[in-house]
Amino acid sequence: MHSQSVDAFRHEHLFLGADHDRNERKTRTVIILCGVMMVAEIAGGALFGSMALIADGLHMSTHAAALLIAALAYVYARRHARDERFVFGTGKLGDLAAFASAIILALIAALIGWESIGRLLRPVPIAFDQALAVAALGLAVNLTSAWLLRDEHDHGAHAHPHDDGRRHAGAAPAAGRGQAHRDHNLRAAYVHVLADAAVSVLAIIGLLAGRQLGWIWMDPVMGIAGACVIANWSWGLVRVAAAVLLDLRPDAALAAAVLERLEKNGDRVADLHLWRIGPGHAAAIVSIVSDRPEPPSRYKALLADLRELSHVTVEVVPCPGH
Image (cartoon, rainbow, N blue to C red):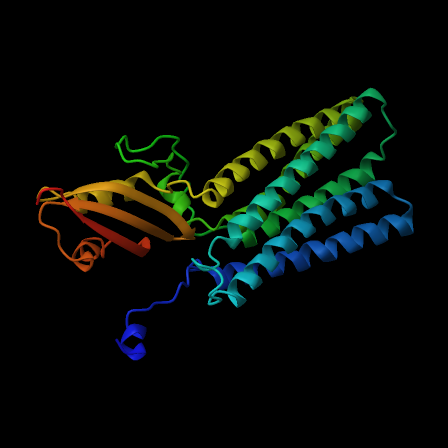
């Protein structure tokens, strides 16, 4: 066969999310916003001798670092989208970045918890008015960042820790239909700024209680509560990102749809491998046992209306004795 004929059967492994470029721009904007706020707080703290300002600026720097990871992941995935060294493209790079961001988020939660426990055991004087101003400014910045990073296509789908109950080998727990389309890299950036906003809200509550009621202990208690909230969000992000990196089956409904279309006229699916290769993109390897085997292209045509399936490989095995 001529090489020109072979080229007609080849296709690109371009499995980036539909909103990849838009999400990349959003992340860059938020990095600039957080970076300016971080520099202003650290410089202001050094100039006015405010440890509260310096501490909040350093805290924001950890989130800026996580956002930078997200931005670099978008850039690298885009620039290497057609690099043949990546067998299934670079669509999962965002999930790798999300996993790294989740680990950073867990470390931030641990540091906040440790510092809060220390201050609960050994209270320190608090400049309430200055600290409240810093917390309010930080909350405004983080709410603006969260609004910029919101996912317009996220309809609140949650993970379902069960499979479709079929007997096929290699089945893994489903991650829920919404997870197949979600950009976990953007989600990680969103969770970072939302976590910072939650810490600011709890800090304001604790500071107001301390100033108005004299409850100094409320400030570190709110810090511990914030650490628990962040740790919970970190664990959720680790789970969804790890599920993609470990090639867990992304969608029980999609697996059921594949079986429904292929298991007809006595044909049976002996093996089904289904995994996510990018936001909104899934790959499938299917082994079919048939009494009357047809060309793989015929079976692929039966799956053509499943838009999430971006890469399909079909193996047809004649039933023994036929």
